[in-house]
Amino acid sequence: MSRLDWIVLAASLLGVVLWGLWKGRGKQTGESYIGGGRDHRWWLIGLSIIATQTSAITFLSTPGQAYADGMRFVQFYFGLPLAAVVLSITAIPLYHRLKASTAYEILENRFDLKTRLLAAILFLIQRGLAVGLTIYAPALVLSVLLGWSLHANILLVGTLVMIYTVTGGTKAVAWAHSSQMIIIAAGMVLAGVMTAHRLPAQVSLGDALHVAGGLGRLNVIDPSFDPNNRYNLWSGLLGGFFLMLSYFGTDQSQVQRYLAGSSVTQSRLGLLLNGIIKIPMQFLILLLGALVFVYYQFHAPPVFFNPGPVKQVLAGPDAGAYRALEADFAKARQAQAAKAEAYVAARHTGAPETIAAAKAELQQAQAGSEAIRGQAVALIRKANPGTNPSDTNYIFLAYVLSSLPAGLVGLVLAAVFSGSMSSMSGEISALGATTVVDLWRRLVGGDPAREVWVGRLATFAWGCFAMAFAEYAARLGSLIEAVNILGSLFYGTILGIFLVAFYVKRVKGGTAFWAALVAEAVVLLCFAFTKISFLWYNLVGCVAVVGLALLFQPLAPPEAPPQESTP
Amino acid sequence: MLSSDQDPQDPPPLTGSWNRLYAVVIGSLVLCILGFALFGWWFR
Image (cartoon, rainbow over all chains, first blue to last red; front, side, top):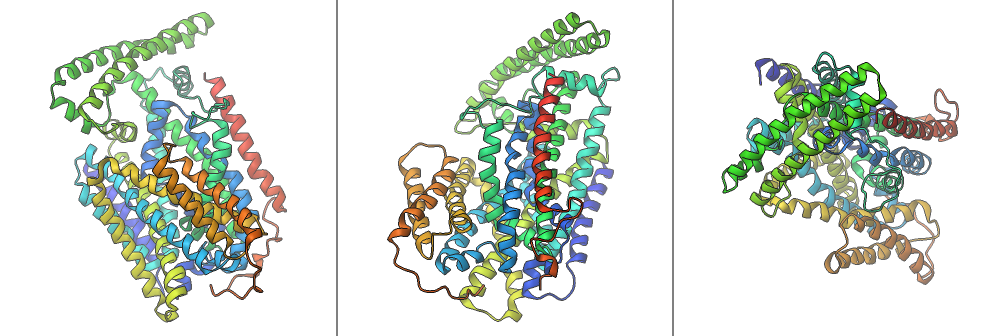
């Protein structure tokens, strides 16, 4: 990294922290600390929602997905606009009417205290573990590619986030999000423009897209209905709808963003803005990955972008075989570059049969180099037993470090840090808010005058927990997947409780609580005694809560007249 | 305190009614799907 990169990186991060501190300054009450003063405009809410969702690893991994697999990943987000509309109609007016500070407050109003506490505690467990990975994963990529200390990375991101999040609360988080989104957008747009600019002079943007499309990297829409295929039109619309409904409707890290709106109108507009912007934004990030793929048609890429597992091979008995494959791969890619140039030249002549022949030769060359890479990956897997080495998260940053000019490298790194900071700040702020509102305020009934300090303490504690867990994650190895499984064990149950609360009016009182407990037991039994993929636990938990609540309700004793809740 | 425009019946800017705005959001999704399909087909 050049001195200019360091200056850009440091100035960007310092700017975010100072901006957050400045906007979050002033005297605060517990309500303003947690609710952001409830004066946010729609555009600030929209940016804050997008920034919370945009983590650094998504940002690093998305271009890599397009490089390796094409652009079909964008279909994952097709359920988002539908979920945004449904939540705008149902959840947002309800949250505002009850003046809720957390998503879980409404469960006490709708059912009872124990259901509220159950959902809040499930959220704290699940999100509390996830937030550590939010900062660990990008820190790992940066440490591998740049040689930076993993611990220093985690400490830097965590400390910067806590400076403005702990002091300024939700307002500081939202305003810092707006500056982080500017950095992320600037980094991605300039990286895209520069990538297009660095293609060979005879290759126009149209040519580049034809090369990417000809090699299967622009396959955005897959209309086939295949349950084994994770990303297709139907899994995006149906599965994505329920996932987004759950994330934006019941996860406090998102609910807190739009509850800071000055009105139902502002909150709705903020969420709907996300519904309109998110898909084109993901499309553009994937398109950047497709352009990087085209760039490497004309420049030699490494066989495997993640140097960590490669070192293991080179230190073992297969080092010679791997070196030979590297040499074969370099030769194959050199020949492939000539085929790519021939395809572009054929396109300029305009003769259809010449274009088709050149395209077929390019596809054949790509298949040949992919086969060599496949053999190299097999050696990498052999040298790293018990792991599933992947280089998808490393492709984009490796490209940036090797190919972009000074200054822009610093800006892209600032965008990566911004992604890490934006999701961590939204998450620890939500964890702190849930701890204060649903546990401290409701159970301890503490002094409102001390609420700001309790909120700061809770946010600080969750930030420290996140950093400690991120440090520990390095030692967890493949157990990281266990953390994801742990999240899936609870997410379906939480969604089920909220679906019953919003849409099944005849279920009352403690029925939802008992249905949720039994549903959670069903999920845990599935985990213990079946081999179904952990992603299905979400559906099992959700359907079990709704089904059991409907089943239990006729058996429930008659309810006493409803009492006023104490949110 | 929440401001007075918290009434869900308050019309949103530009479209004038919430139903029209929801139609715009869903319409943008449909446009994205059709546009992406056309994009993939054109550069296939």
